[in-house]
Amino acid sequence: MTKRTTVFLLLLGLAMTAVAADFSLEKAKRVDGFLARIAAPRPRSLFLKKAVFSESELNSYLNLIYTRKYAPEVTVIELRLKDKNRVDGRLKIQLAGEKYAAVPQFLRDSEVRFRGTFECSNYHMRFVFSELVINGSRFSPDVLDEAYGAAQFNASVKRSIFDWFTLLPGLKNIESSERTIVFFY
Image (tube, rainbow, N blue to C red; front, side, top):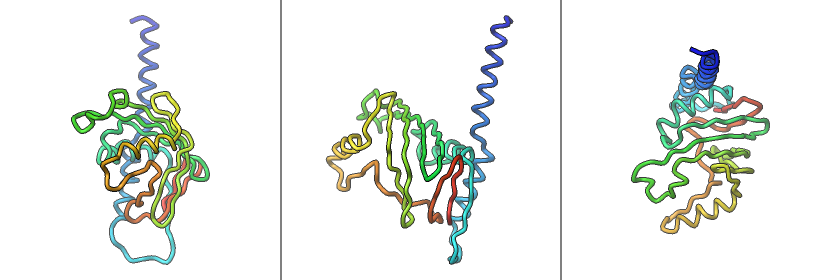
């Protein structure tokens, strides 16, 4: 084995270790267990309680549990949490099968980078995009939302990329700070 090959294998091993360290099943289960626990019916409390999780725990949960259950099209998602509910993120999407036959081929295997802020109100949440890059091309979130709405010409209720959605059961509010997310319940 040459010196160059040895160095390459060592660097490859280090890179794989770094990737594996980013997503931990133990961290994912910690978030999942918390969400399952607060979803169970319990007596109402006058005061909000909070649970704090690291960015790493959230990303582990999203990649190892959430996407596998609810969004198998998402192969990787990484969020970088900032102060004041700001988030930078990246996700990779792979749309395969008959279900996505109408989707143009160039969008079936996509990488989406985004930046924005999430808002919470009355047990609901939404993400307000400030920047959106799909497969290396910048898109105006507002223009993309218009195109998305136009594509729903047969829908009785049109959806928007800016729609509010209901928080998971038991959650009352969510806030983020640098590399940390706080769930209020």
